[in-house]
Image 1 (cartoon, rainbow, N blue to C red):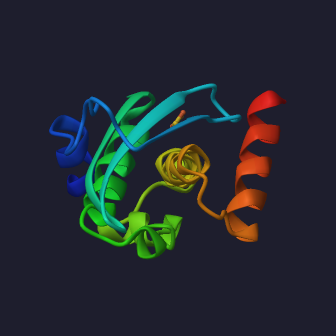
Image 2: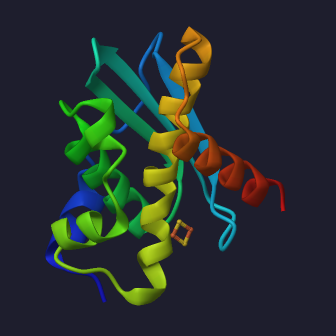
Length: 142
Ligand code: FES
């Protein structure tokens, strides 16, 4: 069912844990399964210097979060926000269709962590990010 890469990331997830005094925290739930994800970012200027995650998620959620954090680390905020499910699935050499939604957990948590950072620092938040935040919150409340 899973590719070797998925199993590798699941058994040895990268960037697992938490960051003390992060610049932003994103917390999201997955409406399909009830799993949750917490993601922390530490910035240096406009770049993601460090990123870590904690999850009560399935094997696919752990593997995809490992990949999302790898892809985001060192990127500018703007580029990190462009990471999508296809990038994640491709990096893992495929993912069963019923598990693709699991990859959204870390992608959404990353955009929520950026939203949190912007909000805490009083920075201007783009319309796209605001909309995404609202739809994630609405979904989590359902
Ligand atoms: S089944 Fe819940 S995140 Fe995968």
